[in-house]
Structure formats: C-alpha cells, structure tokens
Length: 176
Image (cartoon, rainbow, N blue to C red; front, side, top):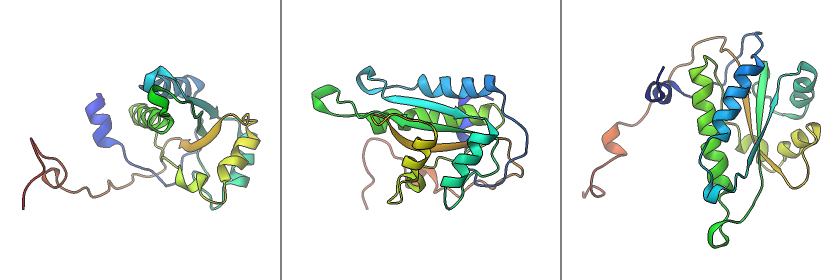
C-alpha cells in the first residue's frame, strides 16, 4: 500500500477488535511514524506511550466511561507539552495532530484499525487526567488523545464524503 492508498483507506473504526496482540515492532513503527511528523519550530512537543500490557489496558478501561476501544489489544496515548515557539506562539495542537495523522496512516498500512479519540477524553469529565494518572504521566505533560490499535473484527463502511468540487477549488473560492 502506498501513502495515497492509505489516505483513501483510512477511516475511524469504532467496532470490536480481534483478540490478537499487536507486536511491539509494529507499535514501534506506528509511534516512529508519529514522531517523524513535522513539529512547529522543531519544538517536538509530542510524546507517546504505547500500552500493550493487558493489566494496564484493563486499568485504562476502568477509567474510560463511556467505553471506547474496549476490545483493542493495544493503545497509544498521545501527550503534549505546551511550549512556546516562534513569536511566542505554541504549535502543540498542530504538532500532535500531525503526529496522530501519521500514526493513523501507519496503522492502516500495517493492517490495523483505530479511531482518533480526543474530545471524548479531554471533555469536562477529564478522562485524560485519569488515564495520565494510571500511566504515571508527569504534570508538565498533557494527555490529549487515545488511539486504540488492533485488527478489526469486521469491515466498517467508509463514511460518505462530499464531492471534491464542493470542498476544493482552484485559484479562488467559487462565486455564486
């Protein structure tokens, strides 16, 4: 699969996962893809924790309510540090977003599925803080995303996308 195919094939998977472990080598490849993403002013604000230990996954599942990715044999937690860069601007959101997209593409390339869970864990109930506590994340890091990783139990339908011409144009915004 080339990168264009991976982009077209990638979609959020919210179904059940097969009970097949994700090899550490594959988790390393996925995380390396995330760490290879561009970073504003090279501040490298994104860090990652892969979880494949069933006991730790069970602890995470106990704090994630409502449940997400509860049958995935692995997960990757995305951390950020809010570090100012150029003209006192912080690019942490852009940095971790690029890292997550790279990892989602690597996940598809390697034959796995995932879903980008951010709002669900960073909402008012602060599940992210509970996950961070389980994983011993220091206070100067913020846990911002949870990516379950595994082999999909079933094929999920691709979401319907608007036609190209409704969202992409050449040389200017179309005039009515």
